[in-house]
Length: 87
Image (cartoon, rainbow, N blue to C red; front, top):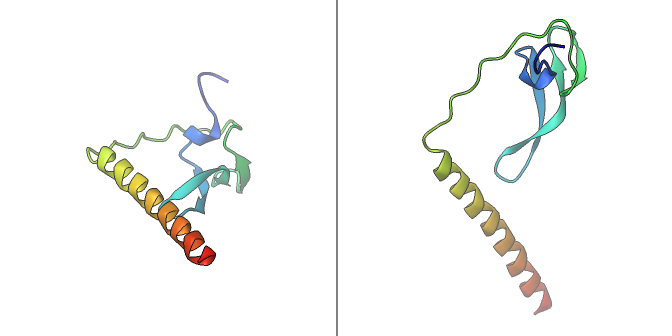
C-alpha cells in the first residue's frame, strides 16, 4: 500500500459510535459503503478513496471546556448521591 490507505481515512467508511454522557465516542469498526460490509478502521483495500479533512472550529477550546464541565457535573451528581445514601 502506498502511503496511509487505512479505512479510517477513506470516504466510503461510515464509522460506528457509542453514546456517552455528552458526546459520541468513536469505535474501531464501521460500515464500508464500497465493500458493503463491516470493517476494522485499520484495514485497507483497493477501493480506498481519500476523504476530505474536516475544518477545525475556532470554538474547539470552548467545546472542550464545556465537555470537561459536563463531566465534572456528572461526577458531582454521583458524589452527592453517595452522600445522600449514607445519611
